[in-house]
Length: 298
Image (cartoon, rainbow, N blue to C red; front, top):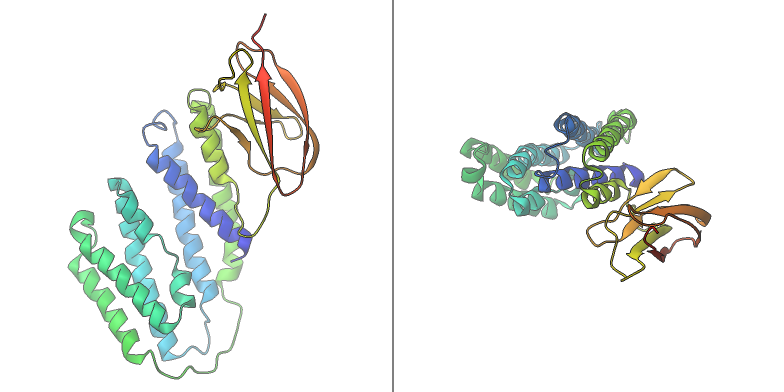
């Protein structure tokens, strides 16, 4: 996968985690469950397609085939365990299970075995709580680990590098996932955008791509009451260049995580206060910070 695709996949997980961790807040959002279910189903397909892209389909050795079988078995059990752990609210366990199959396929033979055994122990230690992981599942996983261990030092045969089927599957899958994300954000904005502005703003930030090594132009706004300097939690920042509206997060800051550099105009407003048209120069590849104080309506 490309860096952009990896960043998209990470954003899907952030969105899912935020909704799961704020289940009470999103109760009023009608239709959200269907959209999240569609998103997660697409993510599973993306994982499978990216696995096909990583695997070399022709000329693999018995050792490599055994490694792939071990990795697939680990992921099969981890995925179903992670879903169950989410439903049980076991956040720490979810994090422990959140490791992509590419880590196993790209790792050295010794490291791949070590990671598989670690995952096996986590699954085994929690199988009573998760219920869906059985002793038979652990036995199956142990067998794939043993098989790979027994032939891990087999000489690697010559490979014929070819384009895997997974490559062409990814673009439409990401398009479908992105469509689900748009629907999720629209529903949340529609139902609880006003009543839960902090959560609404945070999940929009979750949806932004975070590409490793990239430096983005961003803008942070502190919107304060002029009379006493307290944060205005119901304030809104409208970016006139895109017509997008941003609201304060849990830290009382209104954040535009990515923006084009240059001079732009923003409309700053809050119920009970005078609206302000604010022009600002956004410098490239830095966080541009602004403090705006609004006066009460006369």
